Image 1 (spheres, rainbow, N blue to C red):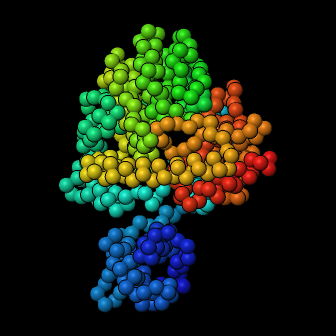
Image 2 (image 1 turned 30 degrees about the vertical axis):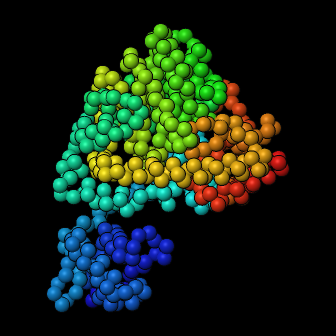
Image 3 (image 1 turned 90 degrees about the vertical axis):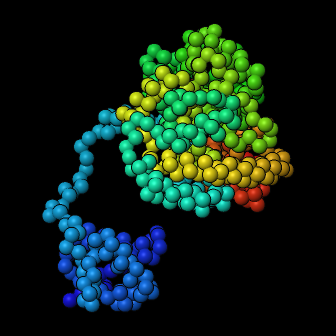
Length: 486
């Protein structure tokens, strides 16, 4: 007797194609022990009629399950559960009960209590998502990324995909970064001076761990990138927040006795100010004079579409005091989590050794896929498409902001993907964000960008990377109405 078709249930809202969902349904039934070795499967026609799908869909699913050794085909007798499938264990997990560990005491909530932006996971469901760092799928080159991923999986690239590179990185990706990415920033480097990271955040963590410890002293910008505080909190170093002005970090405000200065010179986070060349040179002179190092977070460098880009701090660094950190996460897509560090070889040697204790290296398949995507010219085409789209969205948002009488706090003259805004002093933008969310509007309150000892609660950020231009005016109108109704 065959397994009754009533034993099979296909969830209505499952993910993947019908074939994938049928394969998953059968394999899960086998792995859970509901279907045992040697049992006969329903006929393809019978299962297709039961599930309400075509017979060819079930037949193709069965064929794939045979290839994976979940099923065995026996001539005209039909399909049977393979004898080689894993057998469900003969024991059951212990029943859950109330835990006896005080995890709050054990962990101290040292990391989960750090300030962070509240971004809903289902942000795509909101009609007006003015949130930073999310990609617009309509701009991405899915087809060519897929072709590069398939090529990286090919036999010719097999070694780069499967080998453990130990502490090394994909030489193809390193070569492309050296020849094409860094020269745009004015940086000349050798392979031994570049290290791949899991995005800029991982690069900042590596830099902080190598350069700082208890007794160290770091300078950060305020307002500034909120993620750097979480990184520095793990080092035990003292932190001084230096207020920025309309041109970014003022070098003459950096206090004495500093070990490391963290800055976003290309596009300051979150105001979008670009540090003038004169200030960059003054900052480097101060570093030489006062013997401190600089970590340059190359924040949104690629999104300079209003004016020509400025040379990076690293390109002006004759004394080897700058650690340059870049990322492909914003320029390709956020989920990529791939970045790089450029610094003198002794620093890279230490950062590489530290990275190897945590993750060895970023996944080889991701590295090679990105290398192919960049080397075949798809990356440059994507950047040009994003710049064109962002320029249009910025113009639409600028007009809407002006029409509704909202206040821009940090204009930014080079581009970027967001506006830094200021509400009236009496407005708490965390409360504003909570009132806007039921109306389908997502904004980012600005408190987390400031020094916790002196936070400002009336600032907020509006990004346009993931919202369509036609939606922008209505969304800005809802924000203006909510501010007026405070």
